[in-house]
Image (cartoon, rainbow, N blue to C red; front, side):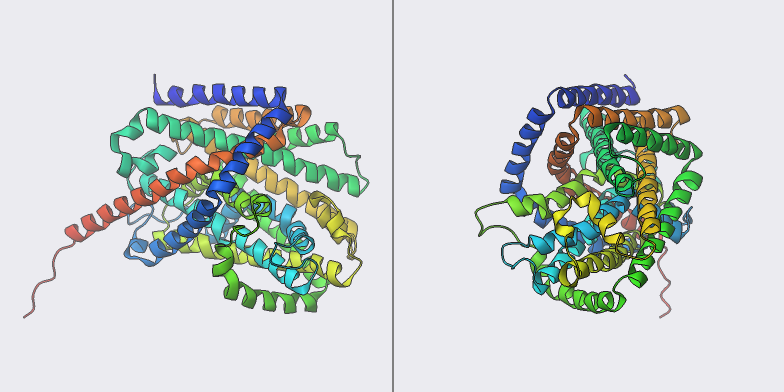
Length: 503
C-alpha cells in the first residue's frame, strides 16, 4: 500500500470511530476522558510545566547559537512572504481566535477566583490576573510551535524531505520513519488537528451565537449555530482553494487590522490613563515574578482543580495544537534563518499578546474594580460583549468583535484544512484542490454533528489527553533537529577552504 493510503484510510476509520462513540454517548465519553485528564494533571502536571519551560529555553538557545545562521532552505533562498504577512499568518492560525474569547474573560475570572495564595477581588489579584494571562498565552504556545515548525522546516526546506511530522524525527529514528512508526505519528497528528479545529470551531460558534443574541440580531439557537458552522466552512473552502499567497494571507492581514481597530477603540474610549498605569505596573510585576510563577504547582493545596482548569489545561492544549500550527509555520517559513524563525516567532507575537491582554484585560478589570462590575457573573462568551456595551459606539464595537471572531475562525479552518491536506498526502506542499476541499467539508461536518448531538467538550478533552504523548514526540524533535543542524554546520565548515598562512 502506498504511503498516502497507509495514512489516509486509518485516519478516516479512527475519526469515524471516535466521533461515533462521542455522539452516541457524549456524557459517558466526556467522563472517561475527564478522568484520564485528571490523572494526567495529578501525575504529570509538573512535567507539563517543566517541558514547556524547556521548550522556551531551547528556542532561545537555538536562536542565539551558531545554528541561527542556517536557513530553512538553501543558503541562497529568501522568504516568500513579507515579515508582516508572516507574523499575521502565524498569529491568526495559531492563537488569534482565543484572544478574542479570553482577552477580557480570563483576567476577570482570575480576579474573582484568584489562586490559593491570593485574596480574590483585590489589587494584587488583578495584577496577578493579567500576569497569569500573559504567562499562559505568551511565550509558551509559540515555543511549542517553534519546536515542531523548526524540525519540519529544516527537514523539508533544507534536506528536501516531504512536509510531514515523521520527517522531523528522521535524524533520530532513521529508517523507522518510513514504516509503521512514521505512519502512526502522522495519523495521530492528523486526527489531533481535525478534532482540535472542529471543537474550537464549535466552541467559537457558541460565542458568535451569543454575540448575535446579545445584539438582538438573532435568537441564540442550535439551528443558528449549525448555519454559522456551515457558512464559515463554505468561506474557508473558498479561501483554501485560492491558496496561501491569496486567501490565507489576505485573511490574516485583515484579522490583525480589525483586531487593531477594536484594540484602539477600547484603549481610547475606555479608561486610557488607568490602562497605561496598569500596563506599566504589569511589566514590572511580570519580570519580577515570571520565573517563580512559571514553575508554580498546587503541591500544598491537596487539589489539582485550579491548575487543571487553567495553567496545565492551556499547556496541554498548546501541545495538542503543535502538529497543526507547527506544520503550517514550517510551510510558510522557507528562506528564514533559524535565528529569525526562533527568536522572531517567540518575541514578536508574545509582545502582541502582552498588548492585547494588557489593554483588554485591564479595561475590563477597571469596570470590576472601580465601576459597575458584574462581568464575573457572566458566561465567558458574553464578557467581551457586556464590557463593550458600556463604551461609545457599543453596537459597532460588538459587531466588530463578532466579525473578528468569524474571520479568525475562517482563517483557522482554512489553514487547518491546508495542513491536514498536506499531512494526508504524505507531505505535499501543494496538495490537490479536491483534497483541500474534502478536509474543509470534513471539519464542518464533524463540528455540526458534535453541535447537534453533543460531545464538543468530550472531544476537546480527548485532544488534551493526546497532548501528553505528543510532548514526547516534541522532545525527540528537539534532539533530532539539533543533530541535523550540527551535521549541516560540520558540512559547511568542511566545505570552507582554509585561509592561507600569511606568515
